[in-house]
Length: 277
Image: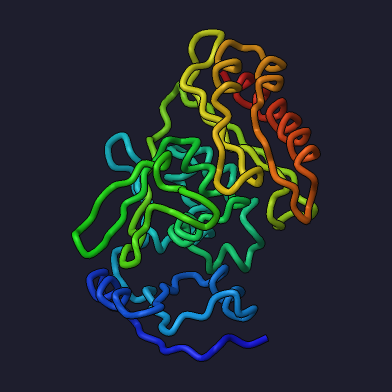
């Protein structure tokens, strides 16, 4: 299929993009790896596409104090190859090879993935697990939204109609930081049936500040807080038993199968966290 007709504008600044978003039925175009597919299937039919690829300063990765800042236009491939990500954001480094295929990672952007908020995508779950935040720019200026407050529902976020993601920030890893990641998909590069992004800090023989963010099990990435508490105590089987997920059935698996697979992944990821202490 081909997309419905639309107008095209190329924004040169963030302010220009925000102003254009004030026009009726406008959407931003960054990497386009989700948007173009939805246009071609006519699941989306905006009147105006605003290309933001020409806006300077919206890409790049840097450690700033105790934070890693990633520009919204940073390509997945750039993050995958980044020494800063590898050293200071190991959870994201673990997740990047699972994001689509090489061609998708060459064009897709981190900001686009966060803004699109696909519940089966890796990066929203990583951001939630790390307790990161999203920098949002809009008509009233820039603001920061915590990951716990950003994902609202199925493809729904805290973004307003004239808002755009300009950066994401996550805490820089320290010596006591532990990260774990695993997903199950029919083929490598497909959307996950179930996935888990996990972060924690070593605390002697135990863990603390455990954050388990499952994806593919609900309308948003989902934290398993009861399992977090059990895993902090070092009891993996208690953490699995405490899983209070209620995944819906979908075309890939029933909710019951998804919940079983979530337990399988929790055991695998718990091993990653514990053995790294």
